[in-house]
Length: 205
Image (cartoon, rainbow, N blue to C red; front, side, top):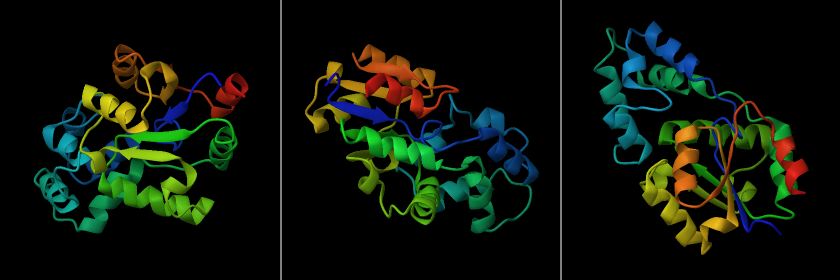
């Protein structure tokens, strides 16, 4: 077996995402300069803190509301924040299931509690998995472990926890800076942009 673990990013690899939808939703709520406050590659401090679990959903919502021009409730804010999250295609779930026959499959995701609660419910309702640990052999969510990509500490943490060497894993992520950081740590990587997991099956099986 070429690798001892496959480590998947979640957003853009397993679940379809569209950041523009959240930008548009917040703009409709009165935040005109969200591009300066949040993007896929550069985030304001409290966004990072939220992804590391350093602030609660309540504190995050409070920060966001400071930028709003009108009052909204928490449900409306969460709906705007979750707009970027689209579907988890059934085919991708089936591919993970097939790869698990040969390889341990892990999940390594920058996320936050509001997003996690949303797509965990979707995973159960649409695909019948009540927990991500039922689909993946091990999961690493940034808000649970207090670290996020592309910081070095998260890559060290995952390898130590898995008791593996960098050369023994294959990491699949759609964000270039995460891939660059993993490469610098000696990981095998695939930059996953505009691809389908079926291509990976052809290569590995």
